[in-house]
Length: 327
Image 1 (cartoon, rainbow, N blue to C red):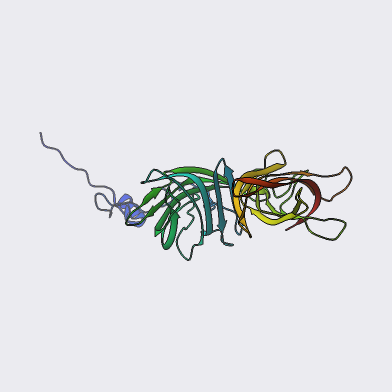
Image 2 (cartoon, one colour):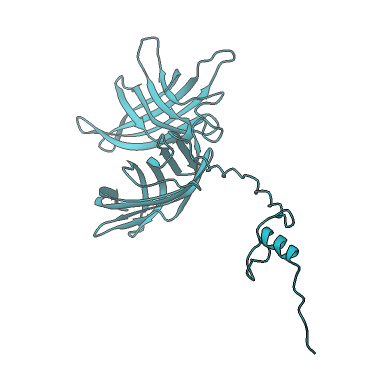
């Protein structure tokens, strides 16, 4: 069948040409006109402000302290909260290759590294060549000590693990992996003071103006370090003994601390002695008085010998009060 294409009227062709409709090639987007209006463009997506970067997970310039059993931890953060600036770890339950116990109290500044990331995590490793420890028999051994720790800060709390190793040509010691938790000083987990005791120095006083004892309290560690006492014991033969004893790392429990022991000593003239002692302290405050106080009791007995014969006994028991001064 033959088809005939009817020619468009000239008027129509002119209108098409004027509107630019017939000159478009296949696939070409036609321009917007009165007869072919453009579609309304979609509205732009709503503006979403960028998510704020998380703030530091550690408190800048803060000190974090912890005490769990025989493990003590302290971490100091730089003012920018960007890294750990200093640390201290103390423990008393490691083991050595000779079967003896391993204890250490290691403290050092961190010159670089130990950066705290956005999640509050930091890690650090260091070796110290001029270190020493003691064998089971009490002999000092020089060697290298290495410490490794990983921590995670979260607001007023930091937790982590620490490992300490000591190595020499004859002895190897390890703390094992120790878990710890520390809290920012001044918070509930690491208070600087309570209703009965505060961090600072305490000093006893007697009517004669003498200072029978002094002690320093560090409450975040619940520790007295050191405690020093001066005493004079009168002997039953008319003589006397005196001494000045220091005690270290005494734990505070229920506002109390104590230390006890015994020892052998020698005196001039071929005399020897055996002493036993016990010191105890109790922190308290008087109602309505802001002063923090401590009451210390010292019980001491020495038996003096000449050869195998006991010559005399020197007993004493004294209680003194002292007051504290915040650090």
